[in-house]
Image 1 (tube, rainbow, N blue to C red):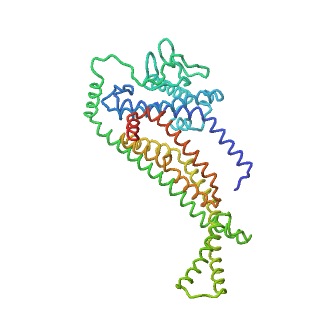
Image 2: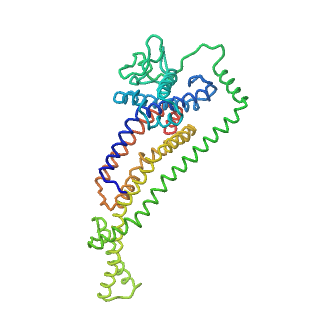
Image 3: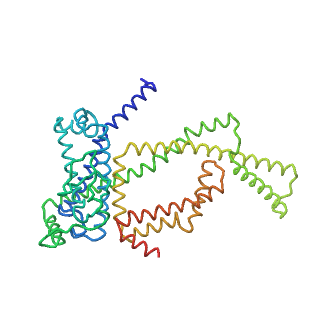
Length: 450
């Protein structure tokens, strides 16, 4: 039974309202998962110690990789906790916990058979766990491995450095301003060097009977992540392409051809195609004259010459009529393929997260020289000295694909501005992010670029 537009509108409005009401639980769950990820890295690679330069027996590149993950997860916690606190100013959490029958946490709690009090306690346990994890990386006296911005809703007690409860009216402590990006680690008094302790912890893990199972488990997880990522990337490529071709040949194509034939549409949809057709016809006429003058073709009468030119004109007109129709079909077919691409992204959010993790592993798994090589290749192709020619070819191809006239002034203006903007953004990314996550790769890039 078909529903009326009003009923569909009410349904969409109700879905949006439900999504908004689930914001506190969703934000808290994402922050909790990020805290779990940090704790897993600590337990697995640093012997339950904070992630730092002197924890474990790792090289500089490996530590840069772990620190990059730490910064990413801390940023997620910071953002989601801001979202959690802001949404609670409009939605009271205790009422949501007691009245929740659907949603991210509600479904999970119902499946586990917990009651209202247990749900509330789980929420506060998650908050306490998040506080415990992030407190290890917040400056207490001197420095911190990862700076936490003063805008984060993670206030610190000025007396003992312990985290205070999350409140909407809580203001950050002034001591947080001291953590301004110093990439060091707090010294802790120990009888043995930390590298020796890290080596002992690693040997202990290798002698653990369950170590082999853990290695096999990690390998299986990595294999599953790789398969899911490659399959989703192929899906993102093949589905829009197949959708484009099917829509162009079986849906959009017949409709456009019928409309143009019934309405006696013009042969050329822009002046550029018309000029190309005229040049092609003129070239054919000059070719006939040249063949006659050099004796490779018998002399023909003016009537036969006119007939051949008319026949060639009809062929050219049919060719450019098809090209004009193809340009119109490309517009609608590309819109349909873009819609298919967006639908895939919306309906596969979990796969997108897996692909992001897979790409992080691939990028940070490269050596410093490989990273520098990729950076130089990318910059030279898109913003290098010879890049204007490539951009010109791309813009001309796009214009012809959609049947648009080639505006030389727009092309030159685009080439004069966009690569410069792209180069500025890329340099800022190197200075702001890559310089912190992999400084050795930046140094290698500078040496190779010089």
